[in-house]
Length: 138
Image (tube, rainbow, N blue to C red):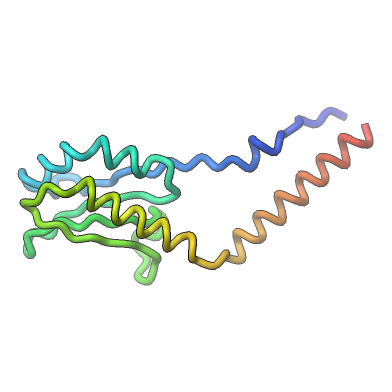
């Protein structure tokens, strides 16, 4: 019986790819200009995170909202998120993005482990134990 050997380094490595989500057609000229200018820096900050950065303009209040949140939680009312509000005519998107990303990262670290994540870890341990037992028997 042949079983594919899965190394621990491959199975325990999580591949996060946080991304920047801009509501299409939502940004007016000045905020879009500043976001384009800061985009590369913001992309570097978010690329290895397990959450995304959402950018949306509030035209009534003349400001832009940068939100760090998991994409799956975007429509949940009480989901964990961090927001920062930037004036539409301000050129501070790099530092605002850094602030909101660091703040949400800290919130994630403080969040208690969920039952599902504990169950997944237990299942992975059982799976690796079973693989090791099969390797020994061969």
